[in-house]
Amino acid sequence: MSARKFAITTTQLRNALLCATAFGIVACASTPMPVDKLAVAKTSVERAEQAQAAQFAQVELQSARTKLAAAQSAADKRDGEAAARMADQADVDAQLAESTARAKQQEQLVTEMENSLRDLRNETLRGNASGSALTPPAQQ
Image (cartoon, rainbow, N blue to C red; front, top):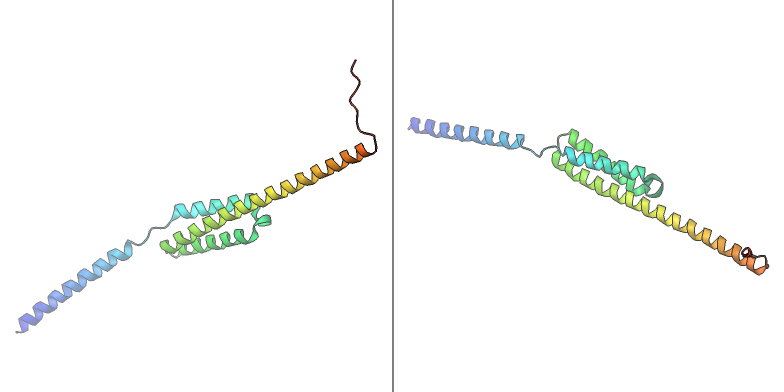
């Protein structure tokens, strides 16, 4: 009867060893570091900065920078899943900051063009009203 207890204990020990080995393999096969996603997010933040997002889209740019820093921190801690998620969010926020900055720059340019056209119209109307409008040279 004692031999049977020993056989069960050996089987249990073998099963426990197999489980520990399986858990070790799973732990080593964790999510790989998203180096490419981190690089894409960093490039997107740099593009937003070049598009003057600091001036025209401060909130969006700051959000992108914060999430990029969180992604790098997660990567440093070997948390590939969190790093990938935060890098994706940083990329999207940076793209939003860049687009917002470019749109606001275009709005500013349109406003300047409209003001210039208005000034030209006013000058033309003043010139016509005073009778000093430019006349074309006489043809010979």
